[in-house]
Length: 484
Image 1 (cartoon, rainbow, N blue to C red):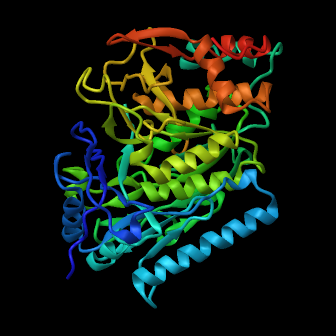
Image 2: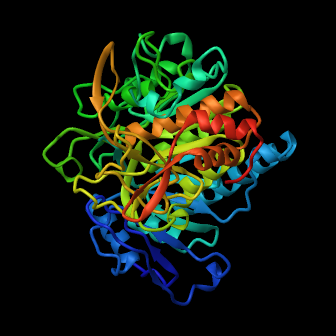
């Protein structure tokens, strides 16, 4: 079998147990790929950042015998919301044709390895053998290949602290009505706090993959299901499946007595986790849940399609992995591209900034996907207005919000307390929905600027970031201010 020719390789090994930095290997590219060098981003590799990346990716494949990869195509692609309908249809046809050609070159007549074909970004998710991976790495129409990474839920009186209550009253009546928040998580279900008429859409994106030991948690074991019922929480018998309900009720719950930030906003619930039955991923807690990057991207692409129909103000992802000291856009091209699409279309993507079990360990670092530039990265604070010692806190964090001992809904009609940046992020998603209700045509930048410029600065490790204050942000917008 031929060996892979030397090429430009950039590693970003985002390991949940360690902090690593990118390492670059530059060499001569094969002539066919000279215009479009391959960039490989393996995830969950066990080698250090200094290891040969192609070898690490191939070794990963040999461990699993078959590998899931996100493949980026070398195709100029314009966000569909910036095209006419005719142009959008033509672009989608071009993308489909390029996908078809790549699939044929990689797999021949059979297409068993095609997991997902994206429509709004030029990517595919494929399941490949070693010789198929080698074909991809030398294909002139491929610009990036990365292992389909895994992420976990970001576990670890708050509405009063961020002064959401001050804009709920009769003077302002900003409660999120007419706006929608999409929650990408373990699904949600709380008949009292999240009434059925407020669940306007939903879906499930989950994966069956013997090599990884994963099992789909969608109804009937399918890998994709698009309806509101499919977005219910995964089975509570699996640890962590109550996470999404807690997050959703913080953002927009309303039981009459207990109220989330945007208590009248609608909810789109997306279940994006799979069950894993291997100690390699779960440690001693088998089974466990993890989320493939490609399942998150599929769900975000669905949100992009629904953005106008449901007036989506924000997406919340209380999900993460790894630690990054700088923006990771180049290391995570597929996720970056769909987040950029949503942001440009006016949908804020709010992401938990990351936690650490070791106090102050996470200072200076942010997890993926919060490390993407256009993601709104959120760190968490105590109820006494200090930065939590387990919260990621770096220059990449955009906003702070309460995230310790937050009392909110759990599946069914239960309630409970959780802590972490998972709990901080939905405070920000809810705040954006409230402000969007006041100024529906505001861009994501305008809303985030209002929150940043009006928030109370809290400092840790020499880094000061604003803690959200919805009342002050409202005043900032009312005065038509555009900068701090």
